[in-house]
Image (cartoon, rainbow, N blue to C red):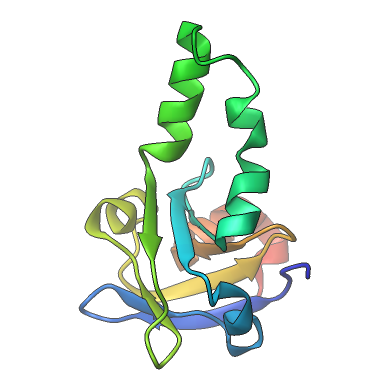
Length: 131
């Protein structure tokens, strides 16, 4: 299933954010949160995370570049579970990376969801960012 759409949510004071209801069933085996390249936090289920990580593991681990790519991907990833309300905890290091506090934008990117600070989202998308 392709992730799509734009959703306004709130990150609570404990760092929890609700996954859009239409996609919660896809995270029954867990949630993997990872630092996004553009200043957001990417949200994957385990299967889609492994598929999306193939480019990071294509270079052999015996090369310096291969080790660097793996560290970039896996050291900044965090495993979580959805609670009964469909929320996942975003750890402090990822909240800091994404400048996430209070209101957030969750958007679909086909292969994953992204969690954005609304101001960063507006800058990233320019005139297309109207929610």
